[in-house]
Structures are given as C-alpha cells and as structure tokens.
Amino acid sequence: MGKFFGKVRGAACVASVFACAAFCYALTRLPVFAGEGYEYSAGASSSAAIVRTDAPFLYKLTHPVAGESARFAGDVTAELLARYRAEVCFTEEVCGTVNYYCHSPLFAGGVTIGGRQINLHLAFDGVQTAAGTPLIFGGF
Image (cartoon, rainbow, N blue to C red; front, side):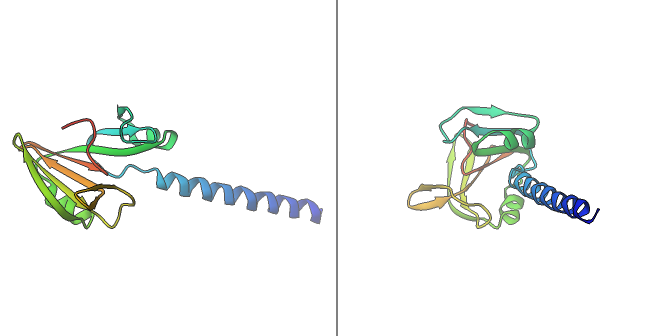
C-alpha cells in the first residue's frame, strides 16, 4: 500500500509541475494592452499579416506574434508613457497624427530607428490613441 501512495504522490508532483509550467507560459502570452480593436502582426516577422481579434489572449496563446497594438478613446499618451515607464526617443507629426517613438524597460527587443531602440509606439490623431509594440503595424 505504501508503494501505491508513493507513486500517486510522485504522479501528483509531476502533474503539479506541468500545471505550473502551463500557467507560467499562459502568463507570458497575456496581451500587453487593455484597449479595444486589438491587432497582432501574425507570424515570425512584422511584415506578416495583420490579424484583428476580439479574443487577444486566445489568439496569442495559440499563434506566434511579432507585434501587437490596440486603440484607446481619447488622448491617453501620458498615461501609457507613465504605465510603461517609457522614454520618448523622438516624435513626428504626419497628417494631424502625432507619433511617439519610445523605449520602455518593461519590453524586450524592439526595432532600431535612427540609432535608437524602439519598443513602444504611440499615436494620437485627435480622437483616439493607438499603442503598439514594437510599432503600430497595419496603419492608424
């Protein structure tokens, strides 16, 4: 009887390790932003297709993504900069949309633009804010 309970405990321990690993993996797949209109740059590169989804966690859990973005009502650029402790590297204005190219210590990787590592891109068009990492792909 002692061997049986020892095997059950061992199996329970192994199952617990797998459950913890699955939970940790799921945490790494959480969407970065809490906005609406979630988009992913699907695949291994940012030049892959743009996918819009209403279930960002499920999509990111089951597909490789190279970037992600979301939309927010109004101007929330200051709030997003503070939330992600981002430094604005440079800005540009195109057709009434102000773009903020930033670096956040909370995000890994990014793209190099003008010799600076960019991993957070914010854009405000006077009505809504878009946020993307490493950039907003697909257009805004």
